[in-house]
Length: 470
Ligand code: BGP
View 1 (spheres, rainbow, N blue to C red):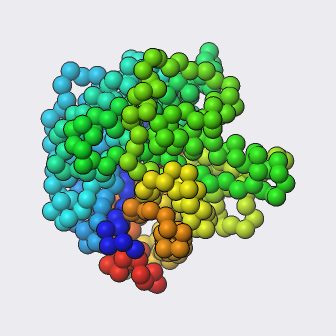
View 2: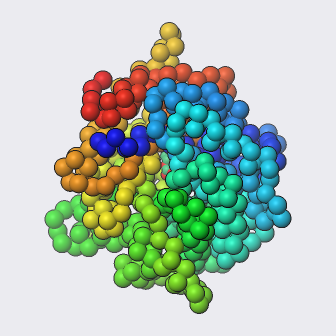
View 3: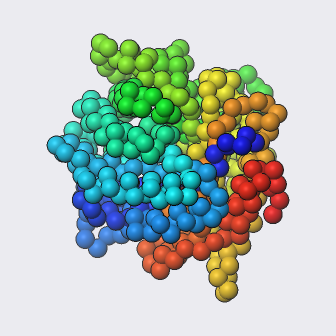
């Protein structure tokens, strides 16, 4: 791999920071979402109810443990660390007249700590959270008002960190807003009975696409060296059979990826986008000047998450459900305990599909396998399943780079330290190299310990991916 390849790991503020009301932070949509369980939707409240367990309130308390956690990332040899800024630490309500200095200072401290070890921050501005106040006051991303507020937030952090952060991502998994049946994390939206979900999702998506394009323009004006990317949930789907109609159904299933990619990379709603708009049966409003905003706000790189694949068919099928996307069972693949189909070859296919279509640098900013871990009596944690999953995916990405000549900037496995699951709110669905002592009821000492995969990934990074053996 290239000597500048960005090996690292990824987290998100609401899933790891905790300290939900410290340092002047406001309530976010994640802070009123209860803990759930496998297969059950998380309950959402309109405010914090005493006595209820909300996993984001403490999470793994990265807010108070960041020095210890970053020291462990450095020990593994991370070149970069993908994290997000909580909008509610900077603007507690989203529309406050002034930013919150304590929140800004917290991220200054985190970035300084990362630079102490030569770790490059990769920062997402919107990772599945927004101020709850904006939901209650304006109807969340249904409203165009959010565009201005999001761009103002972006400008404040760009100005503040322009010498500390080079790599930025606008919206995490932006296409999840149209895939998810309840885009609460993504856009603060639960569809009302009196509205057409097709209209709402296209309008909210348009607002986020405008905000992303204006954010890119503002960032490049503040620091021309910034590299600002989009982020897609890439849900690879195969036609179930070679029946031509299965190919047509499959192509249509994959349109949500390209709907956002085409706008953010090419700068306009393509024929693919128009087909997808028709399929949703929705309508949305574009204002004069919007096309120019989209054209001028194209991204520098494409980042994406890749966890599993599925199949599509014209015939009815049994479907497996992930945290956002769902799709048909593939008999050639194994599944995780949470029903996610393990497909490393699909990662190579994904990298080729995206690079063929867009010819822009790619960045894998999420990949991994949620699993239960057992702590042995001597404190060790043996996680060969995680090592095997990651080994096979790194093998696939190396083939894409070395055999297929795909331009790949880096690799950040998800949840490099155990954290709260976005889909279920569980702690015991673990992705980390670093174990955190906390269970699904919120009990535990929060002590950190190294799993076997910690030592394995450390060696992978040290040898720049040349040796993936255990
Ligand atoms: C992605 C989200 C992440 C993360 C990951 C794993 O969709 O961007 O925030 O949570 O999925 O999903 P889960 O936490 O549901 O296992």
